[in-house]
Length: 254
Image (cartoon, rainbow, N blue to C red; front, side, top):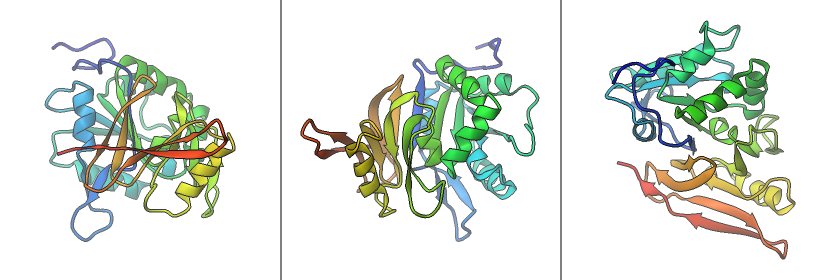
C-alpha cells in the first residue's frame, strides 16, 4: 500500500500492542556479543502487520547507548529481512525528528540495562509522550528486562546495585508489576512476592528467561516462549494477605 503521512508503508497493529519479555537475541557462535534475533522479533512484525521488510528501531538508553551494544545489535540483524535503525540520546539525539522517525516504524525494541535510568532519560527528552503516541498509533513496542519493566508500574531492578530493589516509577501504561529473569536470578522471585504482598506493586506478571508477554491495550492476552520448560506467572495478593503465584503456560514460538 502507499505511504502514510507518518511515513509508515504498512498497516499498523490492530490494537495498541506491547511485548514485555525476558527474551530477545540468541548467542551465535562463541563470542558473547555475536547475536542473532530470536522468534520474538518475527512475532512483533506479525502483530504490527508489517510487510516483507519490517522496520525496527532499537533503543539502547538503558545502557547509555553504548557503541559496542549497538554494534552487536546491527550485527544480529545483518542479512535478515528487518530494516534496522536506532535512536540514540547520548550525547545528543542522532535523529533530527524523533517523533516522525519512531512513528514510521513497525516495531520499537528496547534493550536491557537500568530501567531507572532508562525512564528518567526518556522523560527528560519527552520520549515517554512520543512512545505513548506510537503505541496508540499501532507501532508495536517491545523490549527485554528493563525494556519490559518500563511499560509497567514497576518491578524488581538492579538499577541501584547488585542487591535488587523495588522500582515503582515505570511508565504505568500496563497497570501491573513486572518481574523479569524470574528463573535465573535468585533474588527475583522472593522480592516480587514481597513487593506484591506488601502492596508496593499491584498484581504482577513475571517471566522466566525465554518467555514474553503479549499485551493488547492494557490486557495480557498470552505468554510466548522461545524454548521448552519455561513459564510466565501471575503474582497476586489474596484477601487474607497471602501471596499467590499462578503459572501462565506460554505458547512455543517456532
